[in-house]
Amino acid sequence: MDTNSHERPDFILERRSIEFVPAHLRHGKPSDLLFVWFGANMELPVVAAGAATTLSGLSLGWAAVAILIGVLVGTLLMASHSAQGPHLGLPQMIQSRAQFGFYGAAFPLLFVIVMYLGFYAAGVVLGAQALTALTGLPLSAGIIVLALLSTLVAIFGYNLIHRFERYLSALVAVVFLVLTLLLVFGDVPATHPAPASGGFVLGPFLLAVSVSATSQLGFAPYVADYSRYLPEQTSIKSVFWYTYAGVGISGAWLMILGAALNLRFQQGPVESLGRLAHGAGGWFEALTYVALIVGVFSINALNIYGGYMSALSFVTTFVRRWHGGLGLRLVFIIPVAVVATYLGFLYKDNLLSSFQVFLTLSLVLIIPWTAVNLVDYYAIRHGHYVIEEIHKPDGIYGKVGVAGVVSYAMGFAVQIPFMSNDVYEGPVARLLRDGDISWLVGALVAGAWYYVAKRPWASAGAAQDDGTATERVRESEVPS
Image 1 (cartoon, helix red, strand yellow):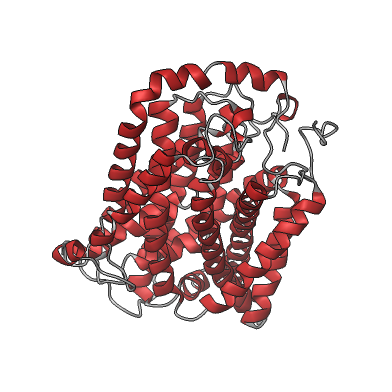
Image 2 (cartoon, rainbow, N blue to C red):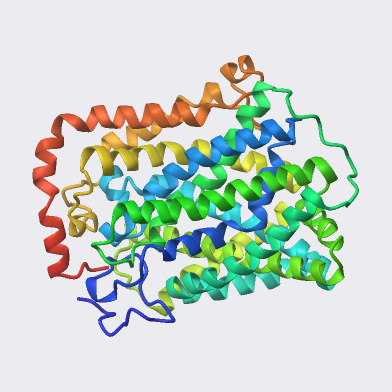
C-alpha cells in the first residue's frame, strides 16, 4: 500500500526514496534537465578534472582535443541512462536488478557509493578553499559549513534540487563566461608559460580522454534519479538531448578552461580563478568565490542524495521492511554526509593528483556496469520491464543475474593490462607510453559478452516481461 498517497507533485520536501513513482506524482518537462545538468556541471571539480589533463605534460591544444573526445563519449553514455528515468520511474541503481539480479545488484552498488563519496570529497575541499579565500574562514571550518548546506538541500530532495539548479546555472554561467573572456583577452600575467600547441604525446593524451570521460560518466549511476518524476509518455529522445546538451556543453567548457588555467598559472583551480577574477576588480573576485561556493554545495547535494539512494538500495536489498519518509531519509543521509565529509579532510592535501587517480579508478569500476545496463535496456529488452518484479528477490529477474555479474567481472578483469595510474600500470599501458584505454576495452567486452549471453533467450524473455509492464504499473502502485 502507498504510504505517501497524499503527496503532491509540487512537493517541497520529498517523501519518496527508491519506490516507483506513480502517475499522480509525475510532473515537469524534459527541458528541465537542461538546467539541472548544466548547473550541476558548472562547478569546481569539473575545472579540476580539466586541470588534471595537463599534469602529465600535455599541451593545451591536445588537452582540448582529448577533453572533447572524452566529453562526447562519456556524455553519450551518461545521457543514455537519463533517458530511462521517465519510462521506468525508478532510481537508476534499483533498475540494475533487472541485469544483475535482486541480490547481485548490490555488488556494483558498493562501488557506486564509493564513487559518490570521492566526488563529494574533492568538491567540498575545493569549495572550502573558495570559502576561505572569500571570508578567511579556516579550511576545516569551511568543509563543515559546506557539508551542512549540501546535506540540507539533499534532505529536501528532488524538487528543491531541480529549482536550485535552474537558478544556479544562470549565475554561475555568467561568472564563468566573464572568467573565460578574462583568460582569453585579459592581461593577467602568467606564472608559467603554456607549452606550444602541436606536440602530441600518446600516453598523456589517452589519460586525458579517460579523465574527461569519467568526469561526465560519473553522473551515470544517478542521472535517471532526476528524470524519474517526468511523465511516463515523455520522449526518450528529448530526455537524452536535453541531458546531453546540459552536461556536455558545461563539461567541455569548464574542463578546457581548467586545462588552460593550470598551464598558465600552475596553481590550484581556486587560486587560479581568484587571480583571474581579481583582474576585473575586487567585487568580481568576491562574486566569483560566491559562485564557486554555491556551485560546490549544489553538486555535493546531488552526491549526498545519490549516495543516500544507493546506500538505501543496498541495505534494503537485505532488510526490506523499511518504508520511505523523512525519518528514513535522515537515517541514511546524515551518515553518508558524515563519511563523505571525513573523506574531504583526507582529500585536502595534494588534491589534483589524487583526484586524477580517483577519476581513472572510478571509470574502471563503473564502465562494465554502464555497458551491461545500456545493452540490456536498448538492445535486449528494448525498455520492457515488469516493475513489480524488480522489487522481488524471487521474481523473474532472479536473485543473482549470472550473465550480468559475469559480464561485469570480465569487463573489469580485461581492463587490468590496459590500466595506467599512480596505483598500477599494466603491460599494454606501458606499450602505449602510459596511455590508458582500459575503459574502452572494458565497455566493449562487458557489453558484447552480456549481449551474447542474453540474446538466445531475448525473444522469449521479452514475451515474459515486456508490454504488460507499462499497463500493470499504471494500474497499481509498487510497494517499497
